[in-house]
Image (cartoon, rainbow over all chains, first blue to last red; front, side, top):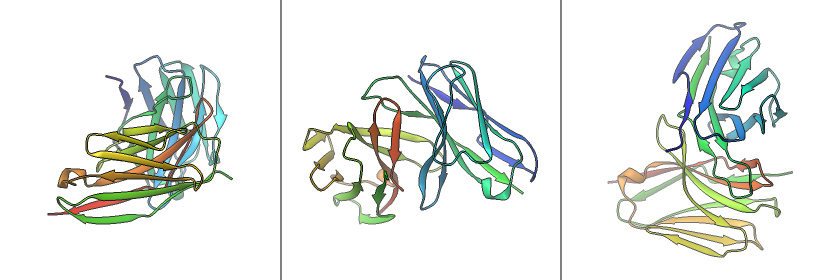
Length: 113
Length: 110
């Protein structure tokens, strides 16, 4: 089974802290994604990566950065957490190609206080 | 711009059929997907349809695609309480772009 694992299910951080969300996939997928999920807004793409050390901005990259030093690992970094970044964060991965199912991690619910 | 819209809530009685609707704007999508999200979990793929198909059936699930109207629907026959979840439609554009809808929360009443 494809597995996408996010390092934490729940996180509580203080405003201004630097926050790292880690994601690991075990299927040698080229593409990895970070989304945030908010009620009524669905999933919004923050960043994605199609190869090691490659990254592309999604729809809402402000306040976030990413790192992909190894193919299996994609990290989301909140440089200085703010309360409006309280959300559910979902990592996903997929192979390259046109019909590629995206496989999701279980999500990290981040609360910034 | 690219947009995928769904109604936010749907409530049905156990044993009835559920129909979840989705409209999208980008006609270049190659595949369209339905994902299910159970409480506290990530998204899991339920089914998908290629953009040149009209219909796909998979056990209790029927997907209908009207490409002219850019309308996608998911019908769940004999809906059970275990079907209560949030359902997302999504379209894939190119090799690594997905556009997700807002999600429809399905509540199944016993």
